[in-house]
Image 1 (tube, rainbow, N blue to C red):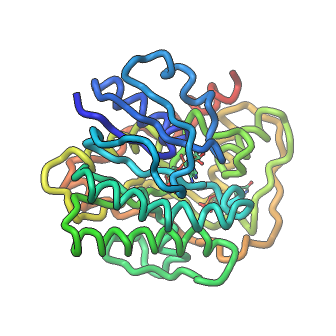
Image 2 (image 1 turned 180 degrees about the vertical axis):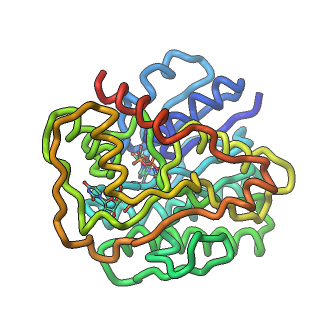
Amino acid sequence: MQNCLVTGGAGFIGSHLCKSLLDDGYKIICLDNLITGNKQNIEGLLSNSNFEFIEADIVQPIRYSLDAIRYVFHLASPASPIDYQNLPEETLLVNSQGTVNILNLAKNTKAKVLIASTSEIYGDPEKHPQKETYWGNANSFGPRSCYDESKRFAEATTYVFLNKYGIDARIIRIFNTYGPNMQKDDGRVVSNFINWALHGETIKIDGDGSQTRSFCYVTDLVEGIKKAMFVESTKGEVFNLGNPEEYKISDLATKIVDLTNSKSQVIYSGTFRPDDPMQRCPDISKARDFLNWEPKVKLTDGLMRTIDFYRS
Ligand code: NAD
Ligand code: UDP
């Protein structure tokens, strides 16, 4: 079968994507500098002769032969707000120079390429739910801008390469995704709440907990990623991929406390994080119609699987 390159393949989403592509019979090169990923995520794949791991930084010039690559999934980038705020320059560079390197690779090899963007390009949205045609409300000069603006740069660069060089590219805007292989200390809301609940520690909610997110289980997302790459005629398209069921952060906390039978108390800081999006929910009608894709895993089931992973 054809060769796939997955950048960020040792990360949370990338490791699930690598496993799923291997199960489908593809040969994988997983490229990762492990800055926020973990080799443990791909431990079970390393013995597979169709899987190769290259520890490298995609911001640097590509020095290894990738001529046989047919499909490139560009997922490399810190994704947790705690991670990208601790690694702001690395985040800017992987989404700018790293994406340019990947698009040049696609141009030179004629490989199909998928660029992982994010719901963060919508900033703190004034339109709800968010459609792909919405331009967003993002702050270019603040704590989240290293991520939001570099992802917007990645999208703009993809647009230029599509139109100037005719490369076969598509963009996915991923909304909050969760599941096994999320680093326990990555600071994202699902990992924090589950860890605190399992240890009986206080669950700390920012603001008054009224801000919303929509949580997609990782296996659903991976199906969407594969469809965005492999379904016919996706060249030049942008797809929202996420779960359209929307929850207040306070309701997520209650749910996790219930599912873990925890005695944790829940406290509210009263202060929102700077530039925190208050409402986030994808409109996935385009992915439904074009890709025949929608999430299947209910939040309760996905959380139980994630809780089991963190327990073990
Ligand atoms: P993650 O941090 O678990 O994985 C990212 C991987 O990229 C890590 O393994 C990291 O080591 C690697 N990486 C970072 N910089 C690199 C570089 N310069 N060279 C090589 N590898 C590098 O994050 P994730 O949640 O798996 O996110 C994967 C992608 O999906 C990211 O592009 C992210 O922006 C996007 N995304 C994720 C979510 C989510 O909810 N998880 C939401 C929106 C967008
Ligand atoms: N959040 C929280 N407590 C935490 C972690 C996150 O209240 O321990 C809130 C955070 O302020 C935000 C939402 O949960 O409103 C989602 O945060 P996360 O860091 O998971 O990702 P984001 O969707 O902001 O990128």
